[in-house]
Length: 97
Image (cartoon, one colour):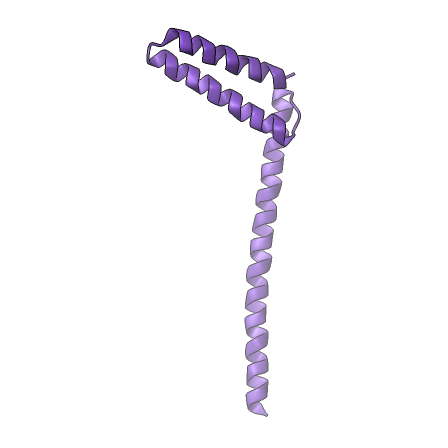
């Protein structure tokens, strides 16, 4: 009889520990999700663009094109730098209102 109550207590203790860990991780991931959503909303509001996945991906590609333009200018490749710069600015002006 005492053995059964020991294992019942052990099961409850282990279940409580697992429940605490799951609740803690759930709270942490909810905070991270909320912070990420607020970041995207603030970024899109500041830039005057939609907060959709397509707009965010287009923004990232446009910034990568501008980065490529800077690298081309640093390599003294003026023509490629101008091409990357025009493409990047065209893409960014397309999504930013």
